[in-house]
Length: 566
Image (cartoon, rainbow, N blue to C red; front, side, top):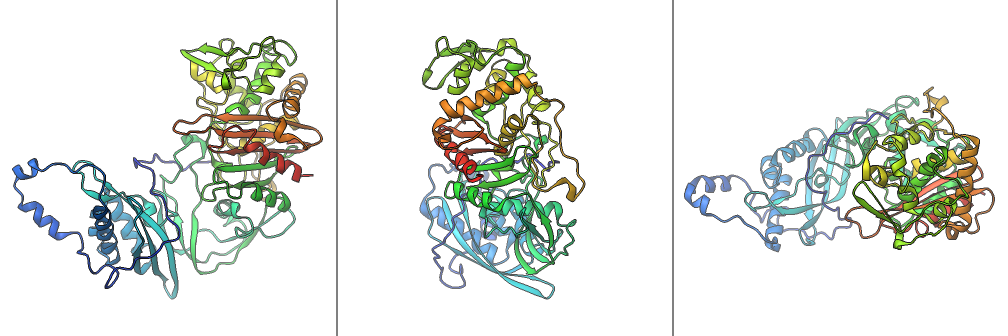
């Protein structure tokens, strides 16, 4: 998919948004007891002598409670009074703040706003917003909760609001803006494969998916637009992961408030209501969990769910897939005669390549073991030991030519990240063989990998049938030989029955195959847990971020979904 990615230039993560706000109402008109930050400070500065200013010490150390409270009050008071310049001056990025705060009234048509602060939590101050949105003769009340964080400004250490667009509204990302007017895209009434309406109320995970469907098909589905307050995504609206060509940062505009309803068009999807309900159940309460199920023979998306509903990690995530990548690597080694299912294959405790020393989980080794045993137990060194025999682009070509990945040309019906397997050398190339290095995937990609193994060829996943709009689906340039395909299925089947996937797949009957994975991530105490598997004509994959071993975390989730498929 085409990407609207822009390099995010803010240097810190967004402040956490605090939901339920215990309001603390300030005496008077909300904030009347506090002086508005502005002109007085300027006069004070001009009165200082240069020598005095130079001698003044830069403020440092933790912020005091008084500094946090007074800074938040200066900002919120000025914003409520419509003094945009003063409000912006109370932040650490006055230019960006002024632009967005000006648009709050001018473009979003928000008026009569009041801001009620809650109790500070360290450097964070939650606040609630009540306002009115007015466009021509239409008006609607607006209420939501947000939060700000106070930091010391670089250079002088003065306390300032750490500026991010999410301060204005929690749905905003840096680079976005709020706009009220006639909707650019008419609403869409999305239907499941049986013709029943899909709603975010029924399937909470599908909120971002429904936004994406409207973004792509709103003008094609026969509806008429209404008037609404919406988030218009900007160039820097991505999640900061993936590459420019990936499409991973492409996020749909979002409706926040309808002032007058449009007439929706209808759009049928491939989602199965029973499987979607099962997927929702599996991720419920698991913020870092995501799962996707496909029909292997066609690529139809039957279910997609995310435990955290603000970002569609299942389709747009860009994460190291860990040892689930060994399915692709194994297919390459089998094709190149660098491995054979039942022949002996090295699995030492350690293997050094390109200046890095690689090891297995808990430093295990398999003496005189076969490649099947190494695959089933997920031996890292069994794969990395073959790096000296490989060209830098071998894995990249395998992923593209056989599995249809890393080509940036999937046309699913909503924006997707189509996997990334860059050409790398030395230690990074070796790390890629086990799903680390520069390799990035998401559950949609890894479900497609299992689907390719099961069906024998790549079928691009899709949520909306290509017949709806005549679009062409991506294709892979070649398929595996029958011998390689049979060997790969044997490896995955053995892993599901006797390897690291056996516990999770217990009770999943029929023609099955699976692979587990754990991916180390800098700064995380626990790795991301991955699992990909197939059963009959169904293929599924999932990830639990910071979950640990894939067999223990993502495995039960995927297995339950495969069981639900009957």
